[in-house]
Length: 593
Image (cartoon, rainbow, N blue to C red; front, side, top):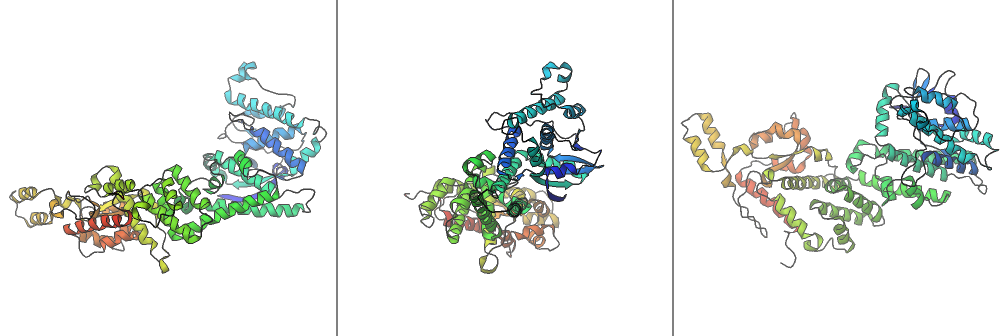
């Protein structure tokens, strides 16, 4: 989408405007609001950036800021992202006596544009109440109010004895030592890019601030250090490229899909700052406590190791499958707890032990055990103990009685969803045993939100009792077609009552039980309809069939790979599924019973 990123200084960016042209604030941008106070005792944006400039100026550092996205329109530069910053610098440079060409044009706020040209360094505040005419224009009044508040904050920061005689040096510093990435895009993409960027603006701003502070601190040039500015730039460039590589990785569709996240940096900063949220203030308070190169490089190394652990998990098929299933069975809060536990707290465990813990968590996620109970079992070294010590049997009982419902397909959602979860797990386990030495293959989690359950023997073939067949027989029709219809009807009672040791399910099964259900992609379900098992099987394995995608579901493939499927097979399959679950999890009874 972008035409390229260029690291540039503020002065170079301003000088890129040709004589007679402008920086344009497009009509889709909101008004200027920098200088606005907040209710959390945090610095407003103007005070924060002024303090950053002062710190960098005193230590003779280059100050890196969040990038600016723009497009060129008829020789002008339209600011897609960065208008607040450029307006601030316009006012700051006016205060510092800059006489170069720097024109801002507001497409829909001409009064604001004219006011900026004449803004006075002596104005402290703007009160719209004193100008009845202007108070009727809320947007314009807002702009001018914050223009003047910005100027007042700038004066408070720089109109001091320390800086009063250094305006020229400050001006040169602002023009030459403040740098950022300039990202050029095509004009027709401008409004779309603006919408996309601003949908996650707050989070992205915090991440960019953290990145900028790390880059600044990781290349501090102290008087005691013999390091050139060129070496400084090389350090910053290398670390910036690494950060951008992480950013690109987390914005890949397959990565976002597996880890169930759409944040710009995925789980990386969220886990590193846990339990705090991704805020620059928290980062400074809890992580980058000292302005030292050693501290910044340590943080980069910690992030690098954390990123590598998540990449390794992504590229290993089995861990990929376990994590994908777990994240889809947990609430948002539990997802964060799980991710922090696995990638941070388990980081020092041997790889084989970590994999064993992950596999156990995968099992626990099926029956929806609480995170604290899973971790407690692992910490107490019980994951290889008796089933009744490994798994919370209350969870086992709830899940078992739900997905073992003889009418699960037509029962309330919990039963149907648990059948789905069990069949997902069965297919994932099949995938984990694929490949050389059971290295596994990645499960396609796109089915999670696009699933359906298919009756192996169609539900339309079942009668509730023999009297219905009798009624059809007595209707007077003797056609071959009607007789075939009678012959293929199956009395539900013929399925029978399952026999399962240690589990009492004495009521007869129905065509809606797990013994007659397989998992498919949703569109594939409609194409099978009321076909017979033999017809479904032929269509399922037809290479030209639209059902091709569902053939990666190996547990489903096994069902359709059988030579026949009759009423007795429904009962056998039901008993096999329930017995498999009981063998792996227990039957929900306490150990003392």
